[in-house]
Amino acid sequence: MGKVICAGLGPGDPELMSVKSWRAIQGARHVAYFRKEGRKGQARTLADSVLPDGVIEHAMEYPVTTEIHFSDPEYNRVMAAFYDLWADTLAEISQSEDVVVLCEGDPFLYGSYMHLYTRLQGRAEQEIIPGITGMSGCWTASGQPITWGDDVLTVAMATLPEEELTRRIKETDALVVMKIGRNLPKLRRALEAAGKADDAWLVERGTMPNQTVQKLSEISGDVPYFSIVLIHGQGRRP
Image (cartoon, rainbow, N blue to C red; front, top):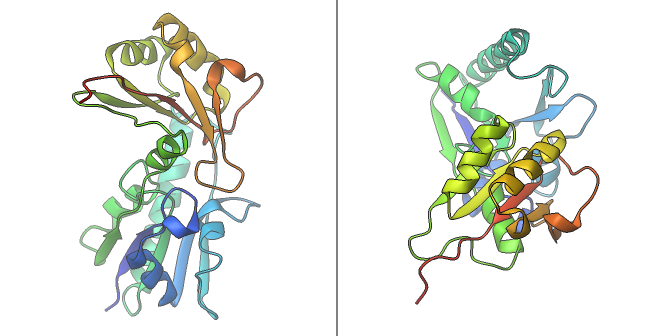
């Protein structure tokens, strides 16, 4: 019997991958990874220098990404069928060999692998290798501690309704906002309403060679979906 190993790859810099993930990938005969159709995929790109010769690759291509809103029942139907299919495939491979699933950041923090993890319960042995999160890579890139003393840190999705997003921003000391992209105008309004627009920083492609760190108030135009907005806590300090 083999097992399904989900290897957290960290925030983007290949040198921030854990030794344990590196060893799992180096010894892999089968490697699976998520990607958008027609793209190489971020996880696959991060593993470029680590994959052994002759490894068998399984590209798990999302049937939809932003074409259908996630609240649409059709989105849930299509994505559920996609995860069912790949859970079946991974379970079948693991009956005789290990298969390593590449995951950006940490698999259990908003990772797509979680949908496979629940489906594989009782069907295959699984090992989860944690990784440095994308958000910690971004706040380190900003050059400022994200929390001090008793600061409360909130992680919010820019996909939240505007009223909910505003409330979350108002109530917290330190903030991480993910999944921005087309939600940026809504996020800007929520930050303004919460009185924190001037405190917000935008980090794009954190820890990667082309990373940028800028005050959100100084940016115009669109930003990538996988950008992160930060507000640093200012709480109890020694």
